[in-house]
Length: 310
Image (tube, rainbow, N blue to C red; front, top):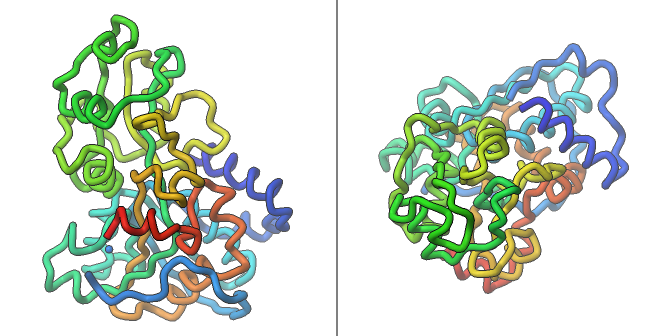
């Protein structure tokens, strides 16, 4: 995971020309939902507030690299602030922010999809960006695109050998995600048409780095990750669906529909430092990080794209 984050941040620096974190950051600590809605991921102002204190966040593995990068930059700006960001899956993040275990719950899906209605109503939703999901296979497989129905048949174990979809005579190995995963919920809704995938408990993981490594090392493997995990990664092949590649451009124009909003939830308005950290993530100062790390700006979505998710 740290390797993935390091590569992503390096890309940001090259693309945006932003100043690298100072040596003081070595002493800082980072790791890696309908409720009320705040402004969506349209960065509208520069971040200038200075604040001290600490905040914790957990949840979405898809949002993890961006949240970690934001924490590093936020702490560079605020010398007396500590932001700790962990993964664990969207369901975990939502439960933890609802019970007060963390200040921020990161999720690929709305809180109502993971929590009881009364609990979800206590949370405030901050849509910080969009995330695109892609099915990935081993590069040696020789498959570049699948139809949506072929994808459904594979993930429901109706199709069990790659030769059935034009590939080699190799058994299909499903690398699946746990039921708490927001990535799984999003992929199920928009890639699999709402059909439940056939879970493979022996290879079930919500760690996207582990999933990518498994796909890379097994010719017959297939899984899915956020586009952000494919920045600077040429070890696996991202599949087109019905001939449409999983790119930000295709997400924005509405031709690729496997995407969702990334949410950061607070319980009520949240602590002052949690509010300021989220504000920073949605500020002009952090905007260049979003696309450089493979995430999308919701302000760039066309009406066609938005209509696919209404």
